[in-house]
Image (cartoon, rainbow over all chains, first blue to last red; front, side):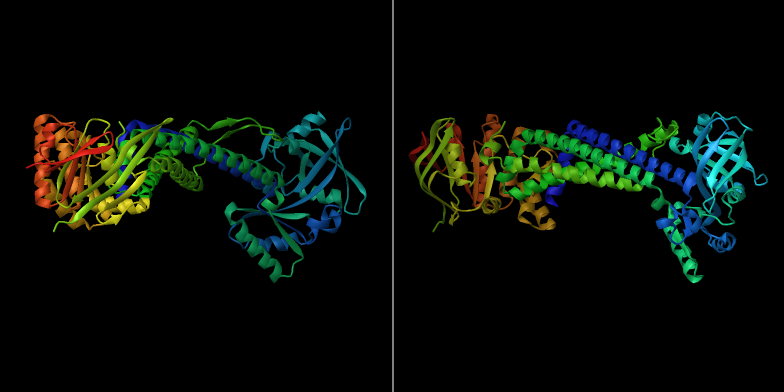
Length: 407
Length: 230
């Protein structure tokens, strides 16, 4: 405790020097909090848009679909959607249960033909599931009309089609036969992913079933009220599957969202590099200020040693100083970081141009995340304490006789 | 019978200044008894400070043997020497060397904190010694709020608060005006008599030397003569 008090006094003795150290800590923490908050927002945005435009939180397939279903989808279809649906709706966390039947094929205006990825959807439920998908033109699919089609905004452009045009879908049905259907273009949608927008088409589920010559569906898509409940609900669904001996398998959004996972890995990598760079800057800034303070305090250190302070005592004093600088600077840094984040959010966020593979840019907000604050604070305190080791080592190497006579 | 407190035997101290070797002390031998009031005099560069530093265990000789308070300190570790200084030796410096961030009370309290003494006992001791040096009312003042004489009184209080066996004062009055210097010497003399602790102070001022009961004259690192005041 004796060096604790001395260190605390020393932190405040040269206000200008301490302010400069605090400024570098504050700058570092603002960078960490804002960048960390930006990353968190990006993860959240990408995750929710992936969930709410394509995947839902949970998908249920016929057992074996993940392994073999892609090459032979007709063999892995679910027949009794209605009874599964009824069982699933008993779970309170579930907001929506819908079905999809997807297919690959060709889409043609008669003059131009392109490949497409089609989804048979339940129209009135699709609006809720794909809430992050924006309708760019026309209207959503309606429950009543079986022969409607909604296509991706990029696909419509490439086809050169107009609203109201009849487009022909050509695909193979579940028996491997080629089948075709004419559907009226009633709208275009945009998901944010330019690649996806260039291939997707949505048609009513019953139209897709007719086209594929089946009464079954490919998968059950489940939307939850809260993404955080995913793991919990998966367990409950698994229980239902086991209890009812259903021949089904479950996939969660993060197992299916390969793009999201690679973005998370990339951003985390970048964030880690930035964290290290900031830590190094803060480290040297504090170490430099402390070394400067040693030159000013040579005589004092010599006196402390002369009157009986051991080297370990001087070391402790400097480590405490580093610790206090980190603790106090860190508090100021959190306040400043949160304020900057709030100002950015109030002013509408930062405009981010379209990321690779995305069709549109977005206004990024800064999420103030407790984990980022705690991480930034703890790392500041640790870096600050560690940065005082070298100055402390320098201080204990001072030759007492020369130090006490230092002017 | 008085007790021997310092025993130096054939002490040599050499420094290197660039390529040049400087002999600060040459074959110095000393015996000092408990309770003595001694002055080490000599012109600038005669080796006074080096001698005090060796006696105070702040420096080690190049050759010779040092016994302080019956302890052979030559082979002591740095930590052990620190403990010895804290427990048995008080220091008074020419430019006071107080800790600027600590108050008068805290400066005097610091050596007791190092000794690990309980707070209540420390408070009693610090208050008593501050009253003795006439600075009780200034106990909350920081060094920069005190005059030169007051700062040196704080230094004396800090040197004596642990009841040391030995107090070393290197030119204690050099930075003070004559009147304040005399007051400080009177105080040191009083403390020597009342606390029965050995005082060794260095000076080159003949007026100051007069206070000493025994005087060692140093020249070019050698003790030229030893005198006694009647």
